Image (cartoon, rainbow, N blue to C red; front, side, top):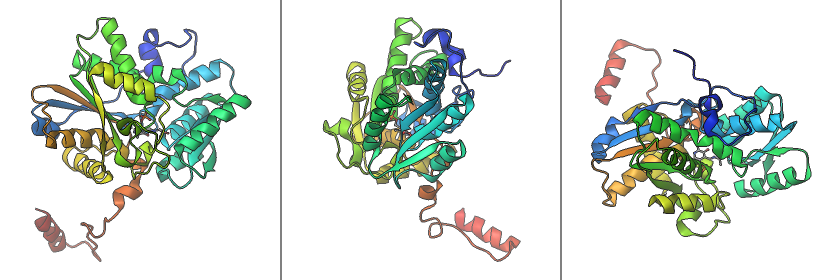
Length: 355
Ligand code: F0G
C-alpha cells in the first residue's frame, strides 16, 4: 500500500492543466465516503456522506486550490489573491505557504468564522477586511488581479473547477458507478459546477452508466439560484454560503437543468438543526453551511419527495471546528453540567438524567 498522492497526481491525465505542472500538494482529496445509517433508515435509500472536512485545511476548497496554486506557481506568479467567506482564504493561504507565494485575501468584515480567520493569519496571508459582503470582495479581487501582477484563484479561475471535479471521480470509483442523487450546499456555485463536470467526464469515458440528479441547497436569505434574482444584501448564519450573486451562476443552472435537478432554499434553523443531528446521529461534525445538503434531504422528505431504493451522496463541505462559536451558542442552558469536584454519585446522576 502507498500513501495517497493528492488529487493532481491521482487523476492527472483527467485534468485540464498543463501536463508539466509540478503539483503543489498537501495530499488533499481521498476523503471518506461514510455510509449514513441514520439517513438511510429515514429515506429507505443508501445514503453516503462525502466528508470534505477531512481535507488538509478542513474543506473541499483544497481540491481546487492544489490545482490553482500549482498552475499559478508554474506560470511564475509571485502573489495570489482571492475573495472569500473564509474557507477559500484558509485553503489559499496554506497552499500559497507551501508554494512560497504571497497570499492576499479579501473577506467580509465580521462575517467569517474565527477558525478560518486563524488559518489565513497563521499561514501568513495579508488579510483585508472589506466593509461589504462576499460579492463586494470578489469584485475587488477581480479588479486587483486585472491591474496588478497577482493571480486570482477564486473559482472564476477554471483551474479551480478542474481540481474540484476529482470529488466526483472518487465517489464513482468507490461506488462503482454514480449515485442516483447528489445533494450539496451552494454558495458561489463553483462546487456543484465542478461535480457536474466530473460526472459528465466519467460518463463520456464510460466509467459510469448514469449521471446523478444534482440538487443544490441555499439559505433562504441568500438564495439567488432559487429566486432567479441576485440578493443585494445576502444574510444567513451559514456564513460560508452568504453570497448574493454567485460567479458560477450559469454553470450551476446548467448542472441542475441537464441532470434533471433543481435548487431549493432552507431556513437557518433547519440548517443548524441538521448540523446538530448529523453530529449526534453520525459522529460527523460539520460547519453550519456544510449541513445544507442533509437539511435539504430532510426537507424534501417532509415535502413528500421519495428517495426509496436509490443511492444518494451528500457532500458535507467543511469541518465543524471551523466555527465553534455557532456550535457552542446556548451550550450552558442546554445541557452543560458544572461541578466543583468530580464525585462518582454526581457523574451517575448526570448519566441517569441523560439516559
Ligand atoms: N460549503 C462551504 C463550507 C463553503 O465554504 C462553501 C463556499 C460552500 C459550501 C459553497 O460552495 O461556493 O462552490 O457553491 N465557500 C467559499 C469561500 C465561497 O470563500 O470559502 P460553492
